Length: 187
Image 1 (tube, one colour):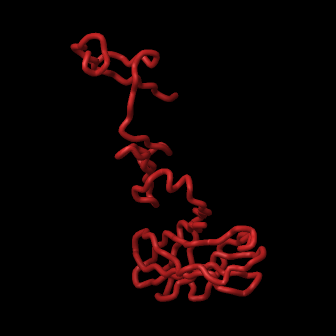
Image 2 (cartoon, rainbow, N blue to C red; image 1 turned 60 degrees about the vertical axis):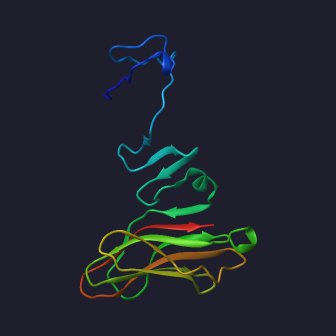
């Protein structure tokens, strides 16, 4: 069962009330106006939305403080499936369609969140299987989750193609792995 809480208020004539309260009283939603300093979702403090300088702002574990309108206007394709590789050969971890530049699809940038074991460098790439072309690559070597940028996307086909997310450990040995947690294609 979920506990319900009712906010309390202190009213005064200068704050819109008819008299000054001497102690907090329960808010009446039919009479009182409430404002909040921020909103948290997902049952935790991982997503925040708030107002600052007449602008609604957004922040989560991947995005650090940007205007909400930038996220609404952005065209993004985000994958959040965690994958790992312990080999020096690229292996496919996800296959997805690219609809082609002629359809209006133009990937402008690619960002990932990755992490590696000690002494390891991870390398991720987007590969066009249909046309046998590398679209973009990105490397990461932090032992904690870190955001990294891919190279500028290139070789995008005009027509539909099958793309793959590929991952490898480009440096390091043994059982240490390179892990990719999130991939974001920005259109």
